[in-house]
Length: 214
Image 1 (cartoon, rainbow, N blue to C red):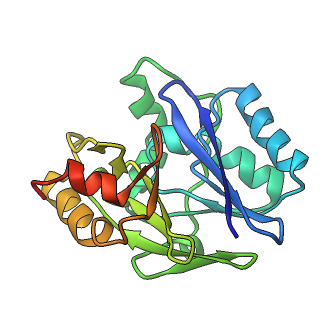
Image 2 (tube, rainbow, N blue to C red):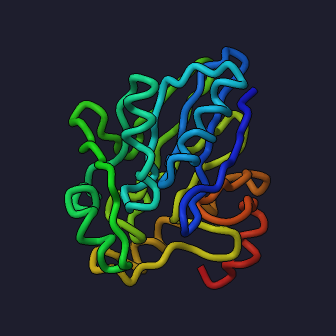
Image 3 (cartoon, rainbow, N blue to C red):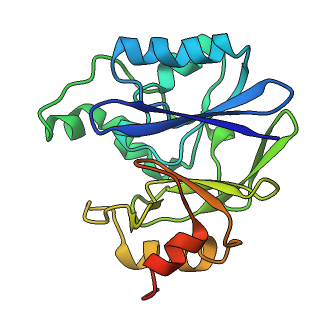
């Protein structure tokens, strides 16, 4: 049985997920820790629950979802896994933040070639398996992590409760995002729980009602 804890971090704010099963092995998804006390909060939860972090996963590489990558990597001896089509967002993080009048004091490591995730890949920890689906549009490298057995999916900024990720960035693609939502998310069982990158959880049933035009 997989457990899910959501912590909200940074000024946007982003949902950071800690997931684990009966083995106490765990994965961290989208660590958005920008401030030192947020990193401390994440570490305290992991320690207090006796978790052994085996995976660091990014749904995409927009800066608000990766602020805490280096902290998790250095603290738990893991390296981030993600699709690498979003690499420019890491390479140019300071310039992209400057648009918002912000500066990040840390750094974000690139995704190693052996850690790149693509459509059809799986990642595992303990007795848990997550299936990787590539759904570009919000960003070229947006992926979601689907736990078929437990009936839940971590969608990053692909799908929110009653909404979806913005596509007005230079590398956004509205048509690709809608196609991916229609063909890969709305075809999941109705009772699938959706854990988004921002805001409250929802279900596929609810989103089918919200997306009658798709």
